[in-house]
Length: 193
Image 1 (spheres, helix red, strand yellow):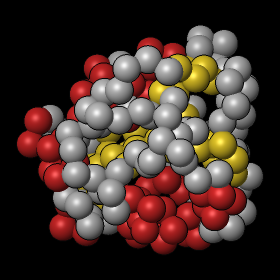
Image 2 (cartoon, one colour):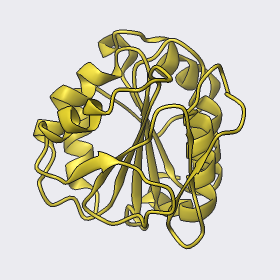
Image 3 (tube, helix red, strand yellow):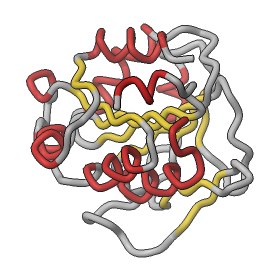
């Protein structure tokens, strides 16, 4: 399986996380190269009211342009996108974003599973998905969908996670491609083409 993955360039990197994931991103973002050749989309569990300053805070940690997704916005390489609070983040086949207000999954909207599954249908083997710290099982079904379509499934090393349940759940329900700490994540992402 690993050899097949090497043949496909990364067309989209998804990062999903819940409790404890912001601390990871604050440490990870400064380590990322400034010229990422692919788009990055973040799906983070947060309060319904959301905090519009979160994207500004994340943007302060990276040289890559970072902002909250707008409905029907095209997905552009080199940009880091944040899913808005209280909407599921979907991908259309014309490679634009779509926001959805359907029911919560695992008590969450945005749902990591929903976004990972949607992106796997559009990006297939060109998709890389990373699951971070969290306290529920959201993300495992999405990672499984990513792998079914030939993409790569990566999880944070649970030993380094503030809330290890989420990465542990994925590891115990599937054979993930990589288990990484923060420096390992940075090296992995910076090596993607």
